[in-house]
Image (cartoon, rainbow, N blue to C red; front, side):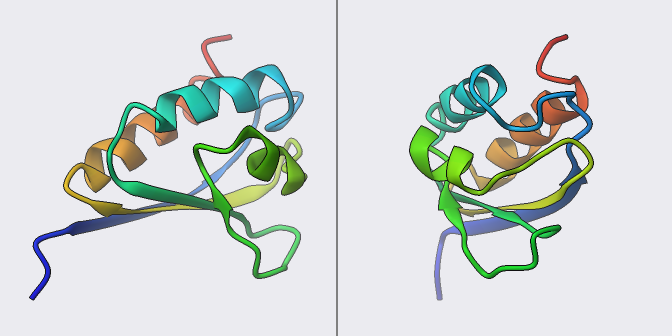
Length: 96
């Protein structure tokens, strides 16, 4: 039996620039605050790739544009908090 928590969420990115450059950097910085393993996938593109949410290169390589749906998934002691923080960041249009 695992003591690790799991959390996930699906959300649509409404930011004009999707998850490119500055928004992606904000996303990665937020993910880095948590100990859980956090993955992100671009559901709109339909491929099975998942990126480490702490890797700017991996996140930007997913090609997440405005209107794309993504899945956030986390495993670890602060998984729920991590997914919640990243979801709030995206919903706030990265503080715009």
